[in-house]
Image (cartoon, rainbow, N blue to C red; front, side):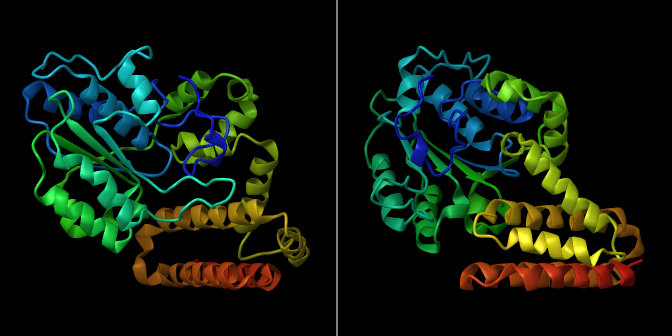
Length: 353
């Protein structure tokens, strides 16, 4: 499938990889795909689906795959055996170009040379897109709306979406992608059939990487294996970690955390100095992500000792998250924060030992 000319300014696309609307290959999530097939075959396809799961596991890819199949379906047809649509089909090209007359996509607006990408999906965009449902589908078939993702909706735009979901027009399908479904409006969740996608297996992630071709598929296996191990079942996260320097940085931070409550002040100072540079934003974000993953793993491993014993670690993690947000908002020096967090974590580990 051809790439769009404005790929470089897409808000939700990984540079060098196909956008989910262009991706025809699909791996894992057989149960999720089967749920849609069953609904289409029976003629009782639910009008609103909440597709949840962690980021980068294929939620949007499944939503566009379902949309292609529905929009390519001849009216009255119920003999589907899969959701595959040929790459050469007009529907596939229209969906990839976001030009299908019966498809509306709610997403953050891509950036341009003169304007930054939007950070939310505003209510005006929702009302404009949902205007499609005021008329009959062009060919008498379904009209499909993809929300990618619902986490970007404002309160006003979520309520505008809710109004249409509560009283859906005939032959309309809403495919709502969310990385954190529990945070959505309860009224939206209650109107949807919920489909929770599980993290991908190592086999599926390797198949995804191989399908992308060079340079992704040419990554040394040692780097790929470590990236998969750190990805928590996310193909997108694996792609982001296919970098030996990133993996080495994560391993360095993890080693410092694993050594707690013992510590090496010189290593903490060296890390803080390296992450305080203006060009270290990505490594700084990786450190915070690594800390979160390490803390989650420790809490899970020690769950048997009880919540009260683990409370100090939970409290410190909450404190670190608050401090990180303040540093980001007020553009503060990261050095004192990084040094303090290791001290705080060391004390929390002692108290939960």
